[in-house]
Image 1 (cartoon, helix red, strand yellow):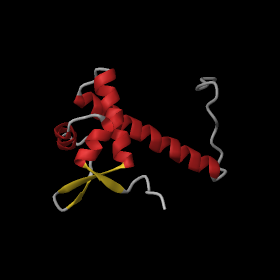
Image 2: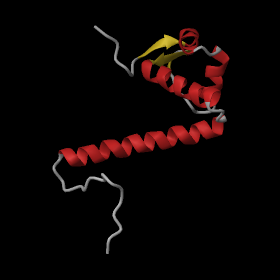
Image 3: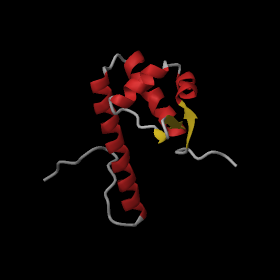
Length: 109
């Protein structure tokens, strides 16, 4: 039986090793609100989703030079875009007349 993507299974040392960061860096990201691992007692437990988010943070900071404030803004915007895409897909699936934006917006009068 496979682990679910959102199931918290990795302690901080394993999570840090998986993403190539120091455990203290993961604690910093948690303090900054960039990642929210589950807690079991005093232990932080990271899910596969958390690991993906840590890798995304790492790409933004190390590869693109974005500071943590910028990372927070980017991640929040990406979450909003994903949510809007899901809502649009749900509307399309429910057969409501939602025009497809193939060639961009039309400004005809």
